[in-house]
Image (tube, rainbow, N blue to C red; front, side):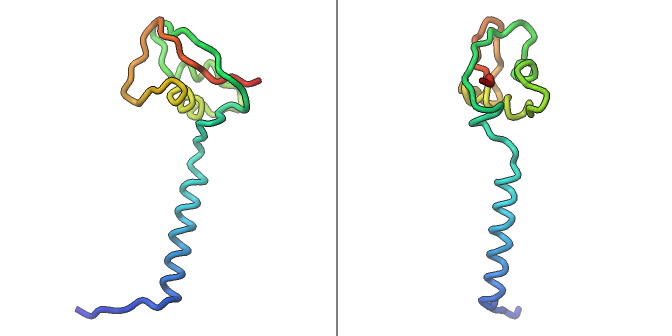
Length: 98
């Protein structure tokens, strides 16, 4: 088996590609839980029977809002993980625009 050394030019190119891919991946994630629907506060919403985080987010979303961002913000504001079931009567903080 023949071992080859990479030239410094090749290492620089590889490093730049890796940095570009990392930047593209993080910048293109598209999920911003800190401000899902613009600057604003939260409103308390009482969970009804049959509600899901997605259905609550859909009601809170405006025409141009991405529901996924609102779902993430609701989960973050209420310390919910992906496995938590919400219950009727439970109060959730839901982001609102001001």
